[in-house]
Image 1 (cartoon, helix red, strand yellow):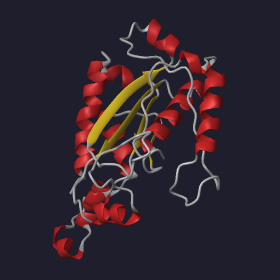
Image 2 (spheres, helix red, strand yellow):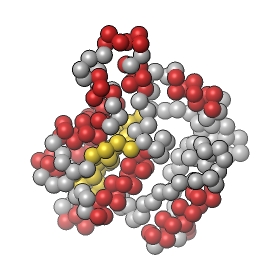
Image 3 (cartoon, one colour):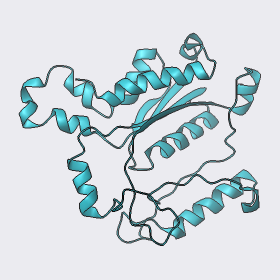
Length: 231
């Protein structure tokens, strides 16, 4: 009855903790938060179909609820910091990361685990909706920054990262892959019509604000990883 996304996240989060060289016992003794970005609940739609009514049991509600995903991890690993699921569609994982980053700054948590799954299970309802909305490319390929771009191609993946304050990570002699200098988010409001369209105005404003907070200039940026749909 459990959404496969929950099961895979449990495994990937544990692998992230191991990769970070951290002991679970230490995470259990401090404020370790779990921040999950999740937009797809295809398994819940599948389980709750009338044709599957006989398969619904006492575990189906927690097994399919998006609100449980983060808390499943916190419960299973006995972590007592903040734990919740964020759904802002395609930007869910980045927004979850932004919140975790802010919580580390304020002391709401001492260690943050940020993770996100995207597993395609039914391939019918949501895929059909994307097609009728004009979101998917005819050839299934993202053509970012190209005038011929006509949509994106759906894919699967599960990822997890463990983040700390830089000073804490250095004091603990942790293996550090990268340092986050600044992080931010905003909303388009009515600067783009329709609601699903990206706005270059607000995205530019966000880039400028985060660059200013970081103390960097645009000339310092050597690599950009962009979101395929541009939202």
